Image (cartoon, rainbow, N blue to C red; front, top):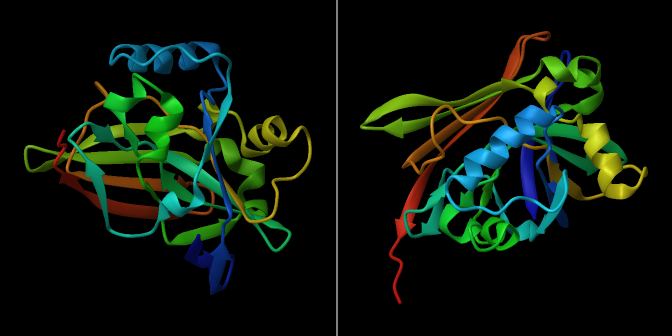
Length: 227
């Protein structure tokens, strides 16, 4: 899937075209056992079975990646999850932001299928991973949803609560670098309140050390669920 980024580094911004052929969703990626259990319980509350192992690596079709401002879903049962997103291109590793948008009704039947049926929105900005590697744990992911016509906080946490990107990559590859043209979402933080759908999802990756942000906002177009 061809994605277009604005790559921001110390003094420059340049266009980056990336053709991703593989997409991996790292699930149950918490670093702390209690935090993992909290997320498992969140999903169990809506009928999602416990995972067989942690972390788990779900393969999703790369053509589900999108940088559009609107995604279409079938039925009113899906919701977003803010995640750091890393990808390998030209022998280097980059970081951006993605939403693991998931059909929660289908998730109770199969987590893997629930991830496959929804598009995965990706931001249009990126950083070099090397520029943030030393302070990865300080990066913050946030999300907001629209409720009652107003924006409400939905997720807020640092990446210190999750396994690091290199750790997740090693777990997936067995120790090798992330394969070329592969993207990986790196897990999410707990929601504020209950997991729930919303017509608008806004997300942000904040770097407090270099004082910069990557953000993306998308709306959800709900298609009728017919039998």
